[in-house]
Length: 541
Image (cartoon, rainbow, N blue to C red; front, side):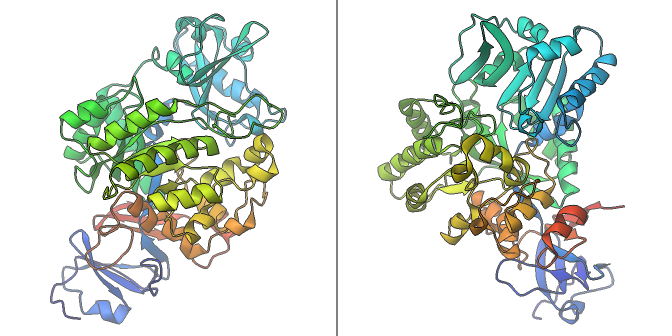
């Protein structure tokens, strides 16, 4: 050991995975907010002084803090105010209606009841809730129930009326209003949801800061120290930037955030951010401006992802194309010229191909261009699309939690041939495309264990095997959750591995994630401790 500096914090007596391809260490020394070194207990002993805080891991497993490469932090924090419509909380349609009625009983008549998280493919009849059902159950309140994916919302008649939606209201650009037999069904897909969101109460600046803090603390309980917030500006425009800045200044930002700015036409916050000098890379290690996000389609489970072939049993439904080529290309080129990377939403193969063309144009116009552009989700691809992505340096950023939560729905709406091959993470890993992973919370829970389980087994919650050639080794899976997430944010030199000089962000787990049975990890693993910037920020009681 050449260093004469003594560590501020030492973790010893554990199994420490320091990064892909590195030998496992027993101990790690931290000075300030950086890793000093890793090694054996004896190696690290020389770095302990009278003031060193020593933590005995007692054989537990430690690794770099997880990086959820795509979620919605503010929405995750705001979720506490909504009725929980997830399959765990409301497994049937009647359970959902009961939960809504319970909330209505405590809510003054005429005030909104909002819920999030349903997945109709989990119901025995596989049908979406309807305005008529909601009307019967909740006659005195406007109600909106958003699907897990966030791309479909069901609204009751009172809510539709408040939004001024009638059976004659035209579908907005990139949106769909559900109608059947000349009657509104209550379904609002994609941009049509804004007709209702725009008239619902918006949280205050203080409420958004509270949501950032609550959401961040929730992530720390899972060992997540970094995340990408996937559409800053979606709830209340520039107020969200202000909220993040104030949260950081006042010590109320619990996790590192790479902020992706909403760039959709009509709701973009890119221009005001650019005027303030907030371009890709600006900021601190706690809050940094990331890429710009444009939506190009919807979700597969909601049958709104834009596909080259139609959905099963719906020969005319290819999903929703949000923007014509010319408009997308113009936006992408303008944002890139302003100094931004792009991290656009594309799930269906038609949407993915449209984004590839947009990014290929950037590369052709400026071959020296160094920004890393991402395709968020990137659910459906083929070999030709992968090769084009590889050549253009495009990063796929999938969510393997989708395989666990929604895999069966994908097979149902797309058929086995397309459905089983959803989100092919091992293909990308083998090609060297550095796929990251995450939860898209609140679409899925930020709990990393279903995501890890899906990567290591390719099994859904029903144990359906989703193309076993896409299974990752445990070490590949951990790399997706750490180093690849950092790479997707251009931060691989500062975080994602536990090596000298890197940020001291560490997660300690109850189980050895490299060797434990995936079923055991799914059912019983827990985060025991989270360290961020060399400080213990969470300990399990």
